[in-house]
Image (cartoon, rainbow, N blue to C red; front, top):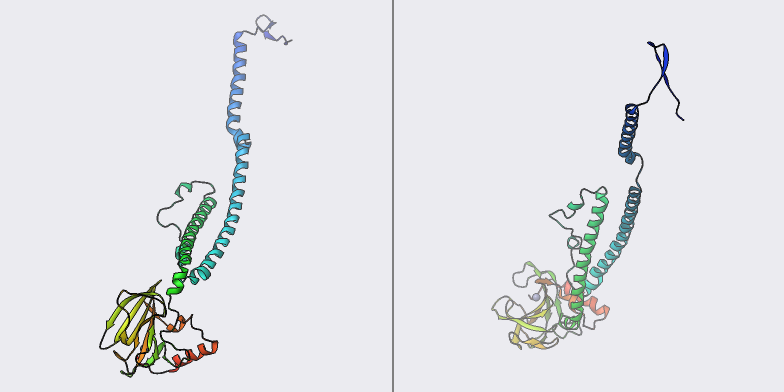
Length: 324
Ligand SMILES: [Zn+2]
């Protein structure tokens, strides 16, 4: 029951009962409604700043989970990188060196992606550093894997050619030299027999009587035959493939023709004294990928004892004059 209200009327000197009309109620309801409305609007805008909605709570939890997933991913990437590094090391030091393949430079193995910023679309993320770092690491690992797999393709191809390669690489001495008496002068600075100055001797000289058989030191194809008055005199070159060429100089006579296929041990000519030469001898060179190398390292097939090998090295390095 609502209370009845009265108002004092000075004219009639009495209390009049207050009649609550439509206006009274309308005003009251309007005030209430407006207040609720204002409160509602305020709450609507302020609430999210103070309290999270269930959706926001779920999203926050998700972000947290994603971040920890990124952490786990980065730890796994650490492992992947270290396994890959180990594989690369083995690739370089074992597989590629067995097959004498060129090493793959670190700059290629570790190459990133230059030029355009591949991670631009991630720039406006709150956690852009973590995300771009991870994306970049993944990209690099992918590229590393690609380089590694092509390297293995190459090694597999080389392994398939292994037999041919073993037959082709120069691996014996070019003349019969069982007692090493024919080793005369080796690789390095020597006094030139004619010019009498110190010159680098890019091969190995074997003294032997004119007419001694000269052998191909590996399978290959005769790639050059020249007959010069000076220099190498009568010279044969054999292309063995796999980057190897051998050169036989100062011969007396050829036993092969240009383009002829030869087998290791096959007689390609006979020792002589042609070209710039002071005595009957064979000058022998091994050329690997266009670079002359010490033939001494290419006598794998010789059955030399350790002692004989030492003696050969001694003989070939002691001599201070070549036969050129
Ligand atoms: Zn020589």
